[in-house]
Length: 205
Image 1 (spheres, rainbow, N blue to C red):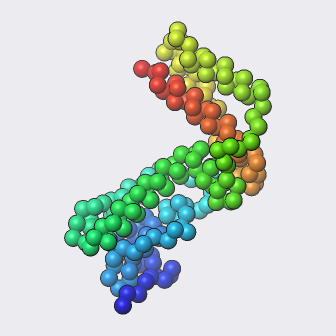
Image 2 (cartoon, one colour):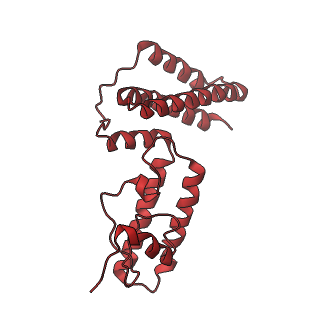
Image 3 (spheres, rainbow, N blue to C red):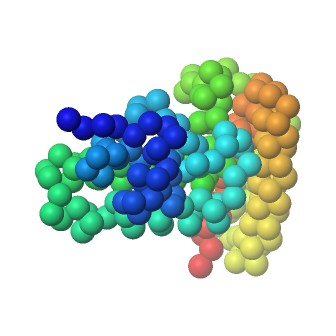
């Protein structure tokens, strides 16, 4: 009969498999050290052993991501049971998904809103001011101009990057004070700036 790790025992069991250096959320059997199905209630933050906050350090996330992917690599489970190989693949996919969300400020913000029960739906009625929308339209027109030079694009990139950096700080403050309405509005603006960044990247040689 298998005995499953209690929360208090999970860390020691995971260290024995090599996974514990990165996450408490990857479950193993205390008796046989075999991987067990993950708890669907575990958040991406818990998977990466991070507190539920908008402010995360991408460098730290990257280190933990590489650690977990290393120990979950298929080669590590070449001689394991078919079930455990499937579980390692499931965990690996989950880690990939969680990393992509947490490392991206926009996706992380949307995810954090969901965790607080404030999900932003596709048909959201977030109202951006006409002035902001005009600013975005004119900025995008400058990017799309067929005659725009590489030097001008570099200048636009610096300008847009500055706006992104500023708004990310504002989003952080909004979450710090649980001002979810402001966070939603700021994330909507960040989406426009991110789109502009992609357009600039495409045109820069």
